Amino acid sequence: MLDALTLATGLAALLLAVWCGWAAYRDQPTKDWHFIGMAVVTLLTLVQLTVGIVWLVRGEEPAQGTVIFVAYLLGSFACVPAAGFMSLAERTRWGSVTVAASGVVLAVLEVRLYDIWKG
Image (cartoon, helix red, strand yellow):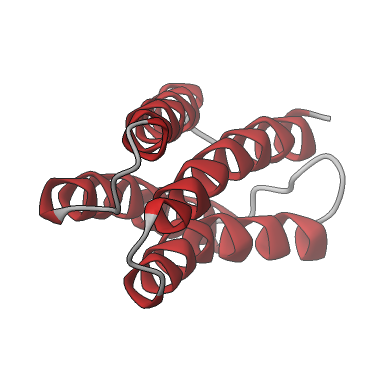
């Protein structure tokens, strides 16, 4: 996997978590600009998903197994959009908390993806 892409995705996820956490602290729901941030993070995970699949098709092998690697790739791709949809349903500060939590979860998933690929 591309180390720079994994790092960029993890850092973007943490920035999103801090941003939405700040909104929750201020008792605000997710706003339109938060959704733009979620879209940027989701785009990074889509690029990562594409790169990971291309590398697998080329014959590269993750150190800890292909099935678990693909499962983590799909989970990281779905993490932030799922929280975004849940925050639309919960238009209070708890929607912002949900997105902030998904940013932290995504950052942890990125560390795990790196670990699965490198061994």
